[in-house]
Image 1 (cartoon, rainbow, N blue to C red):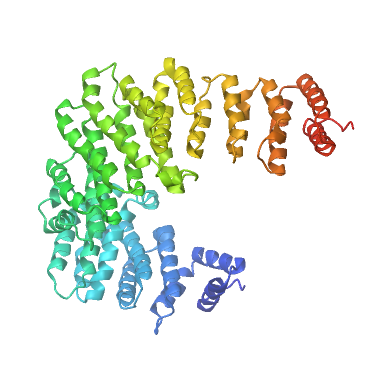
Image 2 (tube, rainbow, N blue to C red):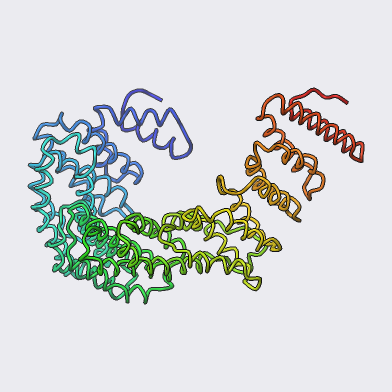
Length: 588
């Protein structure tokens, strides 16, 4: 492509990229965005009538935003004023173009950067809001700019460019009351679309999240009351935005280290609304986000304050509600909170405090047992992907809370495993729990594992067999003979879990006699020939790690044993494979 930067060349390059990958066009546009011609060409593209296609206008706005942030210091005050007026006119024009939100956002970024880098322009925010408060289309564009402004004010790029950043932030805080007044004024207008409320809530959430509107400023304001009304009487329209406003308030409360009791009580009061929303995953996700943030904020600010323990229990009840009523994908986001709480509890240091929390953890374990248990229909199936992922999170939580679990709980779980009449799904789940909780009972680990293995020796369900393999993988606990017997038993199943076996062969090291027995037995297992070869190769690979003398002895032993086997074809094939995998030349 031509090196010269012109409006026509920019349009051509964008066209080439729109139809296929074009490195030359991409390189040209990157160079263009760094050039001094951006100011003129981007402005021409945005000002052209009739309008260019939206993707061209959006690229021009992106280019202007980048250039403004990078070369702001090169602009004179008159340049800044001219650029501001030009951008406002472009924003007004963009507001009238259907489906132009991406363009409005980029122009909003550019205007925000300009105002933040030249605080004198920030003083004109009131005039700007009045200027765009006329037509409904202008109002919607204005709300996008107001949403973006706090985000840009906290961006790392701005922190590197603006020397008096603290004063800029203070200006925004001083402007926040006017912004709230404007937002609440919009709520009273009949000519604005229903989506105006959503955008107003997004602006409110943004200014709150980034610390320019404080909680005590808004708890009695109409805008917050509208958000609260949406959450208390669950309305799908605006629920996400209302929830985000509350989350923003909680997040900033944590930053300020000050949680207003009115905000705390408001969130606690949402429990009935949560109960009424059961079955609607999106609403439950929103409430979960609020409840988790309340727990974390309250916990971090009050964990050393015994006077707040009753409030803490209320937040824990919200976490338990999530575990009982939400789908797994929603519960996942709350799991870390249990680990956070358990890490702060030490029975030796404060047995009374730990005892007061233990009932909540026991309730959690019972809930997790129920929701993590697979249905009977999964008897011959692997775990579904979402359940497998969720179990990984549950395992982490079980390990974290193990120090709060007492022997009677472990006995209850073992009784399920031992009882012959227990449903296989309960047995498998109890094994999973015991596996992850037993690390806190190191003196009993080996005996417990051996007892479990004995209790489930006649159960054939794949998921139970998988738990057996997990149990024998406990580092430094199970003896090699037990491990070998379990691996051999699995290999003799109708459909062995070969990949799970192969990755555990190293548990037999350095007891290579077990490996040699497996190598000689490959033809006994119900495996495809390729799988037999892979198993033999894995065994030989481990033997090679034991050094030349062991390799020599193993090679001699295996070849001699194979020569005594029936079937000359199979015998010769296995001898050949052994010699290759043990790195000896064939001797046939």
